[in-house]
Length: 215
Image 1: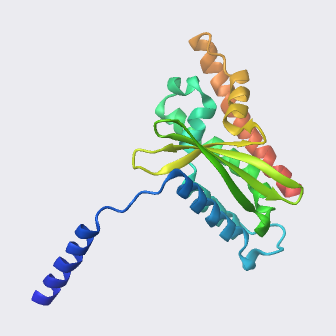
Image 2: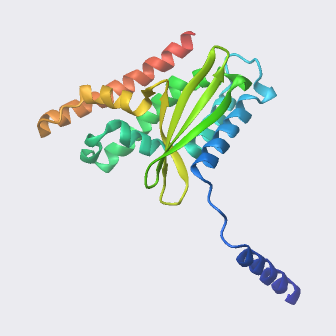
Image 3: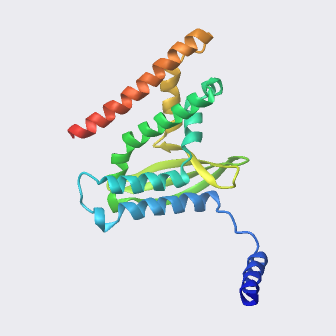
């Protein structure tokens, strides 16, 4: 018993002397996330397999969620109307919007296989807890400029909340689309158009899934 206690005290002392674990920088967070994505894409188990298996897609989704904050992404994409949504409506929107993004872009990203090579350029501090990291995706047709916007969460981790590919922001693109649907001029119109927006989201997800089945 004394030996066990001594071992526990020794390990505790080691952790104390080692100090706190250094948090990842925004660049390190993005790089590790992309490396993990590349690991999934280059897995020999899925090489030259069409269509991609559900197992691979699940691995990809799980990896993306480790460094993408889909709730924050959803909040930015919706814009000011987010503040007028109830907690339940926000959760519903995040779920649907995440589902739409996964179904829309998953197959496209998976098509890169192990050819997905990324070069990192500059890092721009936008304001406290917000940075932009410029990268280039090296494709067969030449480099594709992609910028990632990251926010430091309350737990200290950096998470991606927007992606700008070739000058087109994912967040701004969808914010424009949602803005064309939502009418905030009166409470009545807002409620009506909000219902319409949810219907369109659900239909869009259904259409994307049906399209995949026919491919």
